[in-house]
Length: 595
Image 1 (cartoon, rainbow, N blue to C red):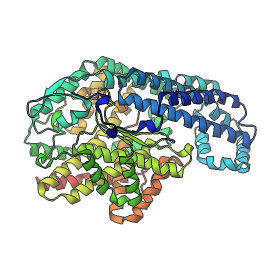
Image 2: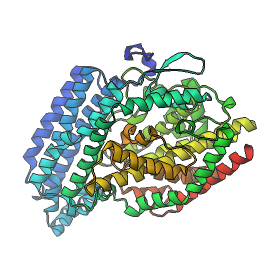
Image 3: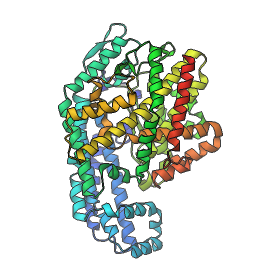
Image 4: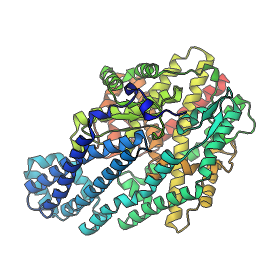
């Protein structure tokens, strides 16, 4: 049975009290932030008066936003500790309302800056020294000119932000707080509660009956909620389409890519290049089926571990030590700061009742960078730790080098920071393998990273694109329609090597990332970029590592495609994806040779 939150040792929890030591301290900042947000309205109409007044408004917006960020991050992380805790639900809801009010209060800034005549704005920027550090902010505002609404409409849209986020919030409550999957018998016949956290371990089991039982129990639970989940996702997609239309974008995809100034060719290159390389995936699945001795591969067989005799369990401290060795090529400074974080309360380690599933990194400019995970001792959990650690280290380097306005990260670049770590881990494990079985086990894990990150996330990206196209063309997104779409893509990506059954056709219903539209493709592009960067670090050494550290320091000081060039990768071209596919094909050759 899952432990209650109170049953987790304090040393295994993140040190969230470092943000706020008491509820009263959070309340104090909540009210301070609310007052600053309310007072910001007094600056309306002043931005075009002078360079000094423009700078004053921008700096006040930064300070108010910085405080509100801290209030929101703390409340949301508290809720994620236990989604069933009503107090945490309430403060998270209040914090979301605060952020919505902030967006409304700030909504006049962009239209008012765009109303300043270009020559006058240039005069402000030249004469006011403090504005010179805002160059990329101004570039971004001017680039968005065609999609910025009149101030009153911007305000209205911002005020609707909380309501428009309802589909994702509803899904989170169903998925993390309310849904139960029952219990199954493990390999030894012991009854085990099935959870988000241990589902992956059951799918990797060598006992096909255990895999099947976990799979059917998991999808049975989603199947019982399928029409509700279809309605929730449908309204999420409709919200994306409505926002895109209101802002005069050609499609939801155009709107999503515009946020980071990513050319449509990047999305198209990803899907096209991966589709052209599906033969290598089909070959891998054939080899895996032979190795497992299974002629009729089912969806619950795909994750089964190869060379399972070499599988082992890791205590958390062992996982941290392995991470230290694997990431040594990034240099001593990176290692030392990382170890401080491991020991210093960055990580919430283990699953508990009501805790948000999966793993993520979160934090704000004025907090330590945090990691939520559900560590269970498998190599996958070690990989998750190594992956997530890339995000805090990225934040650490960025906050030391960039002001608050550039202190965040686009998802496009953030996923590179995490996936470089994973690639270095896999290469370290392959180089350290002492026998055929150990090498086969690691090869299997590395190939699964490619399959689940590059191929699977691209399939998700294609599903999102087609689902949004359906909605934009007036096709209802019913459970049946979504299942047909997903099933067709499953057939294509698996090439008939794995059966597409009724359960897997509902997999779309359990993917949280679909509520952040056109997010998942960044995992695949990030994996491709990371494969190239990690190869450079391992072959070139310190020079490539230093280029990468400079990239980690860059934050949001430029557009993602430009920032990645600092690390030596141009994602505007298909070559990094093709190179990653070549690496995958080579690993398949190695696996076949071993088998």
